[in-house]
Length: 112
Image (cartoon, rainbow, N blue to C red; front, top):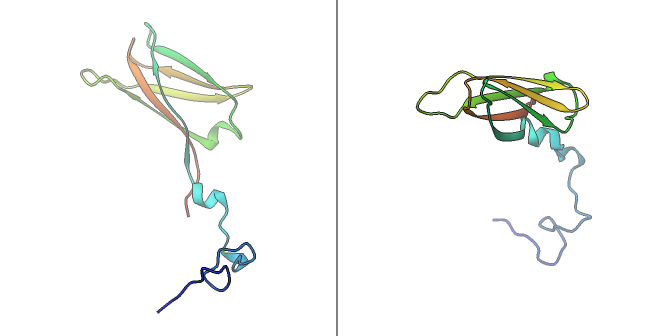
């Protein structure tokens, strides 16, 4: 049988001085792992192209995975997307004219 303290003393205390073992801390990078940076939609123009400009992301383009899917359920088609990080983050889409595409940018990582 266990017990905790409501007086702020002992093993069950949440008082700031009761920090526990220093090696039990977990950094945010281990908790977060891969994370979605952007999730949005874009409509392709009459030529089946679109460009999306976003604020510059940290790192290099290979730090990110970009996915794109056509949302047209009656005639879904292939869609391609590329990412470039210069002074901005730029996504370039190519697919079927006037189709809406949903996309995500995911920062790579591993959740341990």
